Each structure stands twice: as structure tokens, then as C-alpha cells.
Image 1 (tube, one colour):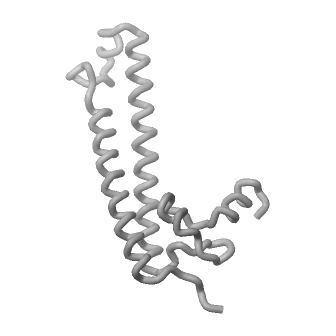
Image 2 (tube, rainbow, N blue to C red):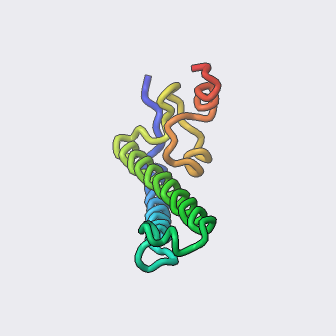
Image 3 (tube, rainbow, N blue to C red):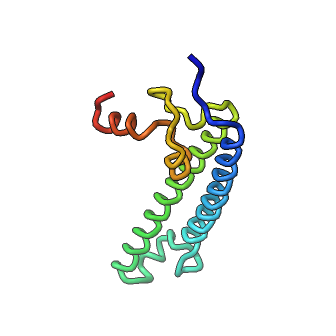
Length: 131
């Protein structure tokens, strides 16, 4: 049985889409990093003095915002790595093929979630622990 795969022309369209998404993600990571590095206190929000220079609730809010930004940055970096893996799957012509059932993943899904490697049916079964 021949392995199912998208034609080369479609794979190149997916490559272009992924590269565009990677550029957006890279810009978002830079923006988040700028938000982490920017603080009300020019000497650094993490210094011991900064905790006592503002109201305790303000310091807590600042700390929460920094933590949230670190989590967002980590999420974006993971997504970027997954997009890189998707590009590798294009190079090996495995892109768009479900790793569980071997069927082609719907083009609409590949456009919305280009880093996926499972079709909707298999992903749902996996979520429900049916696989």
C-alpha cells in the first residue's frame, strides 16, 4: 500500500504558511521578552529594594505579570519548536499524514494547526483514552 501524502505543490503552500506563523511567533516572543525586561523600577523589578519601594499588592501584581509573561514565552517557544518539526515533516513528506491511522489529515486542519500530526478522529480517541 502506497503511503498517503500531500502533493509537492500543497506541501510548499504549507511550508510558506508555517514560515509566516514562525515569523509571527518570533515577533511575539520578542514582545513578551521586552515586557519581562521592562519594569517600573529602572534598577530592576527583581531587586530586593523594589519589593519595599511599592505597595505590597503592587509588588504581587508585578510578580504575577512577570510569571504570566514567562509562561506565555515558554508556550510560544514550544509552539515555534513544533512548527520547526512540522517543517521537517514537510521535508520528509510525512507532513499531513496521521501518525496513528496513516490517513491524510484534512487540509483545513493542517491550515489551522500546522504542527499537528494526528487527524481529528485519532486525536479525539487519544483524548478519550480510546487509543
